Length: 349
Ligand code: ADP
Ligand code: MG
Image (tube, rainbow, N blue to C red):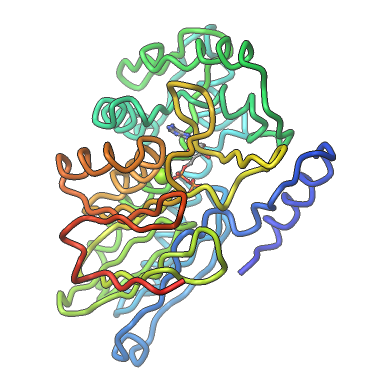
């Protein structure tokens, strides 16, 4: 399950590391969920399968039904299209243009970029500010962009937090402007969910019976038969195996955020890639959280936001927004929505 590209980037990261930091390679970039199709009937009918590397992760696409080949092609094209817009490593992408021109001038971007940024603004409000698409300067400070991982000083963090005000992100028509030099947007916590929403729309337009997409731990399940059940495994955040299995039916989006895929350890402390926008430090209230929603961007954003917010706030917001959650605290004790009792099978560790 390791793509060539991710091994290369992992090796690059390794070279730039200082000695005292132990890094766990992001080889399986965010494969927080493991999926196995359950019903035998799924396996007996022919399907089209493709694995691609895009949006910084490994993406598995599986489609059953008459127009399965056309669907896989269209899905792949859509992913590549969005990746070209959202890639923050490229100065030519929409995100690159917005960031390079922060504090300089507004830039014109595609309607997809406008839509995803508006969803991000809306989710900032819905998550008590725990999801902040303008967090990039903070994650860069901790080295999560360039691979130069380090623990910054309190002064550096305070100064950098001044560059994460989402109110400085102005959208007018198809133009976007970031108010201050040094500010930057980072779609890492929403882009995959947004892409899955677009993929769902593609699937619904094709003659397709079932589909399963695993975009680096963000999963889409689709079936025209509401009786069919997908088994989705949740990875043990502190071990190699599966800690629980969800039985999912219908068209759903399932996303996991955790501290076990991209992190470094410095002086025995684990620092992960999801940041508390209030403190500017990696969040550490829980170790993993999975969100099940009818919307891709909602499950993606909320898994990130709930990872920051912790158990109590996660339950409150989940109830308000009508999503189900299953999470694990520091001692790997599970907590989950009442509605999941019948659908969740937990393994003994
Ligand atoms: P992954 O992308 O690894 O599957 P997430 O969906 O939880 O995991 O997204 C984490 C990414 O979101 C980080 O790599 C970073 O780009 C971005 N991010 C980190 N903290 C926040 C935050 N508080 N709000 C919004 N985005 C964040
Ligand atoms: Mg997310």
